[in-house]
Length: 414
Image (cartoon, rainbow, N blue to C red; front, side, top):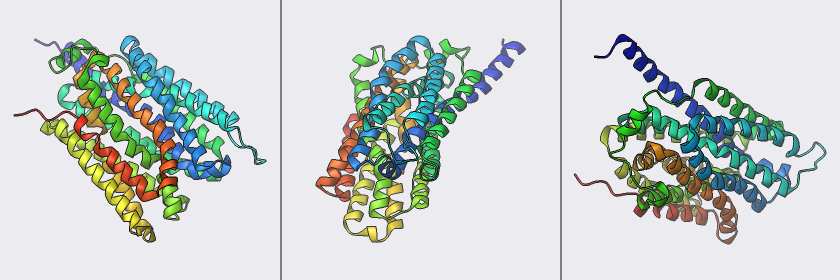
């Protein structure tokens, strides 16, 4: 029989898990403000740093490259050391790098700009340190929540990506145009430092960790994630489906400016609406799949819807909808939401396949694939745009999304 002391401890543990989830959301949102917000300053980066589209793509791609090369090592360290030390290290180190960038990687008031190589290195270092946030916060959430609620919990955590991106998209273009990139980097540094303080206060291992780990062992693989073909297929599927998402996040502002002739306010509102819609859909999808137990079917359906939305955007752009810029913006927002809604469901399915004890490694694998896409996408888009046009960019994004369909596992037969 459970004693009152045991019941009180269980009650405190149950309540504390929401604080842990809040820490995961804050940590991801603070770094996502950089990932999703810095690309929305691309127009001002071109003018402030005297860059062309190709150079802007290289700078933004360096951020993705740093994430790509660091995610798996950070995931392995998370499984070995635990969530707390990795997340604290990453958040405070990222904040320090951003503060350094606010001093040494910004244009001067006399029109001089730092060398391209220096800014590329700074973005690479930012991504390398920030790669610690994703896997460690995801593993912490998996440890504190049970199987019947992990889809919702992970989806709420994943809302931090569009939440932070939306905050960055709403705030950073204004800061860049009005106060310069020093203010941009300082604001991001403050967000990471505040999230680090929350992590220091609330994140620790759950008292019933061994119980939670055993609860999912029947569905978890006994093979190491790096040697499991099922996990690699899901990892590749997630990575491929993120490419059209990054196409929107990195170059939609340039598309809106060049094709729709949008100003600062319209660009910020459009990108903010995209991120808000993605955040709402991620929460809904997590709750929906928890209730119905249909994660795999939902993932495959999301691939088809995302692909169709980008093909429709390409067709509309080719047919001259640029003469109706707000319709163009609405279609861009719709495509961006469709290609962003599935994240929490996919990460939950992946972590369930791997098992809690290996979740850090599995999440590190998939984040590596994701950020390889973040590195490659902004490098490729300027060349596709130069060779074809904006309809060609969005059509290629739709085709790329469809390639993820055979990679996601088929729903289990009844």
